[in-house]
Image 1 (cartoon, rainbow, N blue to C red):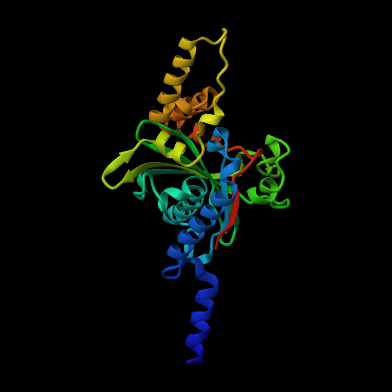
Image 2 (cartoon, rainbow, N blue to C red; image 1 turned 90 degrees about the vertical axis):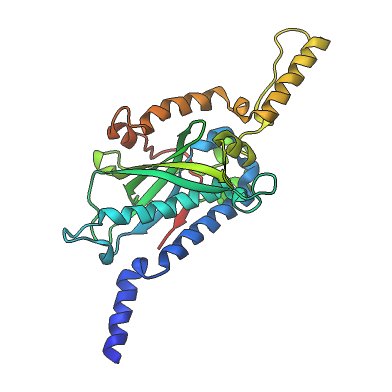
Amino acid sequence: MEAWIWVIGLLFIFGLKNMPLIWHFRFFRALAAGMLVHRKAKPLFQPSHIFLPAVSATRSPLMECDFNLHKSNSTYFTDLDVSRAYLSGILFGPLFLKGLNGQRCNLIVGAVACSFRREIKPYRAYETWTRIACWDDKWIYMVTHFVSSRTSALPPDMLESGADNRKNESEKFPQVSRYDTTKGAVLASAVTQFVCKQGRRTVPPAHILAASGLLNRTHLAYQPSSPLSPSSFSDKRMRLDETISKPEALIPADVEAIRRTNLGVVQLQGGWGKVHELFQSEGAILGFHKCI
């Protein structure tokens, strides 16, 4: 009996990440952590924050390794689930509970593609950096980079650096420490296609971003080039009505430029090399999540 206890104990220690129901715990814990960030930091959101990454840290236990003694290819996808859940909670948290017009929404995975560059050895620490790369009329494209863990201090999360300090835009989100920019920094990259469903109805990505507070009429500045007249007031009202019914009109020009550029990248028009190059080790992040 004592021998079995030792065996179970060792399996729990060395294979906790792969125990039954642990995936569910990891997924919903990450989603809840992201939703908590959204709840407290939504007033800080700007359109440019759409493209910021959320970072999750974990390790590869022995139970995840294949006969080559490195992380099995199939186990990358469970890490992707957790990393995407954290980012989705941060950006779209209320949609999973309150939904749009009182009807709950779901983000459904339509396709996932992954490219492996470097093996991950047993118990090696690594991070997943997940962010929205772009979207079209139907799909949201998320890109995840598996990267080696940094050796310097961890960055503060968004709440620590932003919620209590709003002096300027650069202080609203934390700055991350510098990574080694050698080719070995990115271990693997993945592209995920999401579609938002409200019942059986497909919700356009621009509507989701607007409902989440990432696109707002206050982000647009109306600057008339000539003195105002009754007709100009009418034109302004028409443009305002258009932004209410068409959230696409709320997208700033610089955000739209990034969206169009990245769309070709995630569609692999330039190969996986361009997807790997989307990883940026410097700048701001949405949040940091320590995962099992």
